[in-house]
Amino acid sequence: MKNIVLIFLTLVLQIDLKAQTIKILFDATKAETAGNADWVIDADQHNLDWNPGPILNGGDESNAQQFPTPDQSTVISSTAETYWEGSLSAWGIDMVKRGYHVETLPYNGAITYGNTSNAQDLSNYKVFIIDEPNIRFTSVEKTAMLNFVQNGGGLFMISDHTVSDRNGDGWDSPHIWNDFMDTNTVHPFGIHFDYANFSQTTSNVANLPGDPLLHGIMGNVTEVKWSGGTSMTLSTANNASVKGVVFKTGASTTGTTNVLVAYATYGSGRVAAMADSSPADDGTGDPNDQLYNGWIQDASGNHEKIIVNATIWLATEATHVSDYPNIETKMIYIYPNPSSNIVNIDIPKNMNLNSAQIIISDIVGKKVLQLDKITNYSISFSVNQLKEGLYFVHLNEDGVLKDLSKLMIQ
Picture 1 (cartoon, one colour):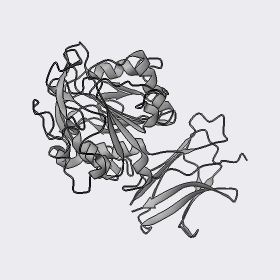
Picture 2 (spheres, rainbow, N blue to C red):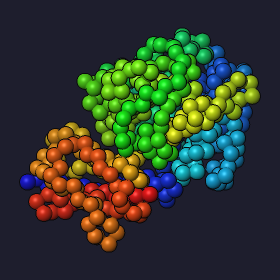
Picture 3 (cartoon, helix red, strand yellow):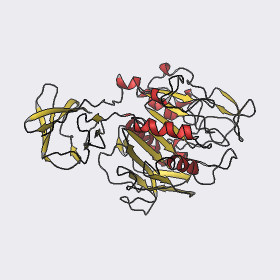
Picture 4 (tube, rainbow, N blue to C red):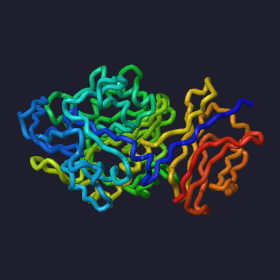
């Protein structure tokens, strides 16, 4: 039998030394502050005109700088989101409190991948967040973003409703996102933003115990509120991994239409998609705009949960399978990690398991849990009988124990 060699999975802990090196980049190059929007984590100046722009010193829209101020090294557990001025400041502060590093790609920055002359090249970041772009991506930018994901990056795509062109250039976010995904490979993530405009609060959440977006570190997601958003249609033919987790009221939670929140893997990377920009709005930011608190006030705080859970999932590494050259998807995912209840393991579907075993051991090597005759490629199991602490996950093939991952129970 071929030997499966697996390396350790990088843990994403709530406060973790490794997480401090993980960098998250928020985009501000695509008119994200045009009109009555302020999709940035912090802006010290308000002097941009985006109609169509950008024109420096031509208007009063937020001009986000690379590093938020005060410096993120001064953020502590009690720091309020108003420490920074931007309607995504709560999102940024939340991530810093969990040990991540956040930056903004300013209005005159370049979206590149593999360009060593660009200090903010996407290769220097783990997650790239674009909330409601209002300027089309160039062909160079499209290729850079696709390569970023394919090579292990995490992309968070947030859209708004159709006919929401904020800078008057004839393009709005759902058309811009679909234009990006129609380039080179048609809808490589299996996600298409619908051209719709509706508002509703829905508790139509998929029944997926242990799902990293619905049941991640921030807690369990039970509802969302769309305030002028759209939906998505998914295609498992284009991407077999794509999955919807929140749906419009009345829609099937196992279907591929009327999806509000979805995610997928692509190459070595990950993608999350949300079809409304309102949930990320924390109600503060540009004093020239009328902003609303969708982050905490709407949906009983569920927006913060699902957005932060998704961001952490995007930033999570996967275990690589090194010596199976014919395996198309060379990744094993273990999530959520840390966990307190359900753990999921996703294994490449064309890997020959031959009724292997999954064994969990504690830090002294004592076996605490064993799953026999593993034949499914998506495994879910409970760990609520285990005490809090660090454990090791192994794959047992023909009596040969191979390290699979570290697992934190909390």
